[in-house]
View: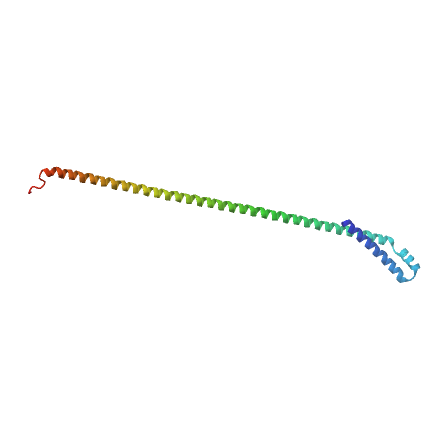
Length: 166
């Protein structure tokens, strides 16, 4: 594509140079002068000018290619930088998600431990209540046994005078 541009530019330049020569010949007057003006023109100077123009076009083409390559390199560097930023962002998000999961697990473990502790306290309270109830029952039975013994003692003593004045 760049060679086509260079070729087109060289053709346009050559046509321009030739048309200038023809135009100069026409302004001086007749057909004899157009042949004379071409002969008068320094063809070597025209050839040198064409070579210089071609060299300048090649230099411009090299500069354009260098700019294009620099632009491509810059775009590639930008793409790599964006990819690196995206990678770092993904790593950051993964770390945040891991921290959230860890916190949730820790909270769940604490909640479970609190529930176990509450269940243990309830079991201990139930055991104490059961022990208290058993002690009360044992005391009640002991009180009944004492009362029964006191009644038996009183009945035995009934045959004897329990009180001396009667």
